[in-house]
Length: 121
Image (cartoon, rainbow, N blue to C red):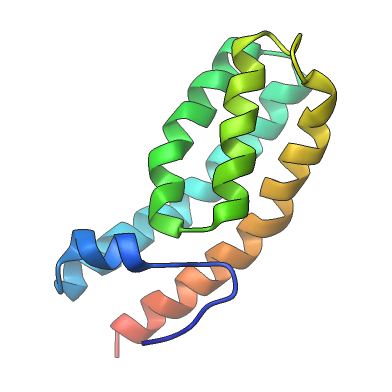
């Protein structure tokens, strides 16, 4: 079993239940979805579209569960909470919280790709 710096695949492994094809399919979805959603969140923040930001952040909760990165999960949860208030409660923290996500996600995706390559062997 590989040890990653930005991933904890315990939940993903549990959900795949030893089925490498299922695990590969789930990882492929994560590799595609995470960058798209992160860019969407960045744009929604720039547009101050709080409702959509909240919705995307809420959707990301389940996605990030498969990644298993506590810092990303915590930052995303705070983003959702702040977006619920239209940025009125903690909006000044959003750039920092988005920064956490935008800094970590490329590393997490790179590790997911490594895991996927290992499954293809």
